[in-house]
Length: 489
Ligand code: SF4
Image (cartoon, rainbow, N blue to C red):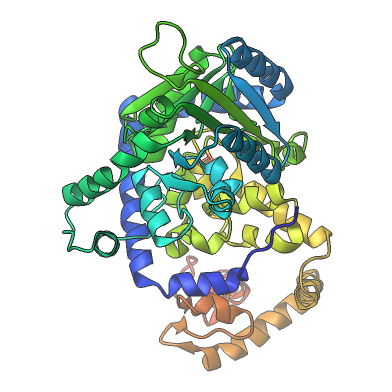
């Protein structure tokens, strides 16, 4: 099903960069996450080898996905669990609503699950009058604001403590102070009764272990454990690629995931759920369901240029280093997955370049995302491939195609190239002020809207090079170019 972005990308970006609170909050948290990642990965040592190993394991799983999915499904069933395969978001929601109907569920409590966000589970439940409550603190906060997550790991990254305290005060009817212990105590108090009343607990799945049929969750707040043990029914949502062959492989990701996501050596809880409560178990749900969601992933399988994106472990590290994400936050990307991973995976999952083909342009192609990725996904190459795909599909505007035709025609011949440089030089005095162009012409205006463009040098590289050669020939002057490298090609 084609899903439309509610507002065009440029408009979303303009809206985001005008919000100074958002930019300050995103910068502060991404700085903290990135420096934590750098120090914890350095302390572990051999980070590159860990990345290599992570990449190798994930590529192996994705290449043999049918085999490992089959093994997982058999093992979950052997443990008494129910497995459902959902081809699409609508199918995943339909399966869940059927379970909720059979259990006569009135209330659903959730821990963090990006896949349940992807299929828009909350909206579907609200539409039929089932109460749905997020129990992860960040998710709880944005649910109160009626917003979507704006970071994969830190959903409320764009909110500061003043905004959160105001929202908590509004719902409690009394003044709640802005200090962290008070805010968390308030949320805990509100959520406690929800845990006790919930008919179904919904969780995500960081990894499923094929050899044992286990679901593994990395959490920090303890809510994940309560959700999977207190309500009578536990439903886990899993993207169909989130598999590991064995517990031995999990060791690599226990090292890679928390460090890349939050800079922790390990999250407070690493929970391994082996289906519903078995005889002799002290706790656990009475019934366990695993919903394995495709929703466009099989479109990517077998695609040489993009299959590796299925190696993603949703750590969020690429967001924290991306200069674009750090300036616009997550909502500007318009869909569930923000940042560089969102710019790649959204058009692919949606299989709709017409609607989502602008996202790969929300990147400076600096490559920081690829450097940061713990499983070495070449994100910036993929962004270029997606741009090329958009061009091949004829989805770029007519003026852009003409501009590139003119550009390639000009740069193909030395004479035309020199002439164009001369013309640009003539324009500089009209555009530049004190070494910078503050308002660029035509499409450059978008670039200079948020920053100044350094004024090109007065002499071109060729002019300067010609002068140097002349000086050398006549035996005069300094062959280093004298005037200090103030030149451009
Ligand atoms: S693409 Fe890499 S860095 Fe980005 S979320 Fe996925 S695993 Fe993490």
